[in-house]
Length: 252
Image (cartoon, rainbow, N blue to C red; front, side):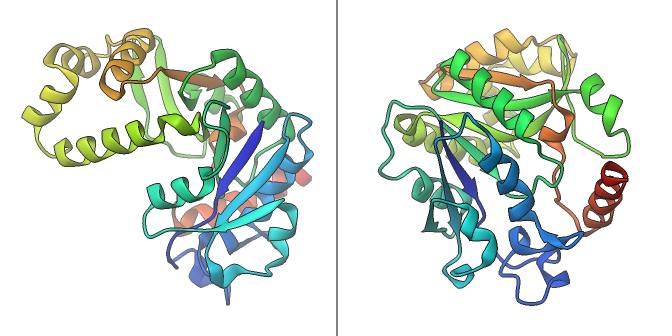
């Protein structure tokens, strides 16, 4: 499966800790960039047929990019970068799209996600990790959890996407962004019944998938990963020190 790694975005507080880093993907964590720590296990996966990295033009020539087969420019927004990363790829073939801030990612987690994405064969596959799976390995890593009737889940480090579905996903994200601060608009988008079920913890993954597929106009599936490292990312400056402690423990 082709993989796209999103390493675009602005310079931020995490990047500020590494001189010359254009954004957090190129910030050092325990002596290696986040991008390299993400690319090494993807490169090591036998399920990966090629890697395309989306990165700022200012990162051209960076050693971490040598792990990619191809580099393309990022965009002003994440969806522009996603469009750049998917451009020219076969519209009906599933692509695994990864964030670039996964310091604990393993080749086994990559293999597993790609296998599950292929089996799901959805237009849009959302990677996630269940609460118990996460807590067994990384109880010190905080997450925002979605409480479903099937359990609690957080988002993972990748989605699976058929490029043909990108325009519909774009449209949904735009509608969601316009509705996110208005309960009435959210109800109009998702339906009161679904919102109430979610608020009460009674919404199943199956029902959420069905409604998401209706709204987007493309098949949407959750792809739970049994690998907790799939959801360990670096969002805040404090996450850098935490990731370094985890890496130190893993290498001890």
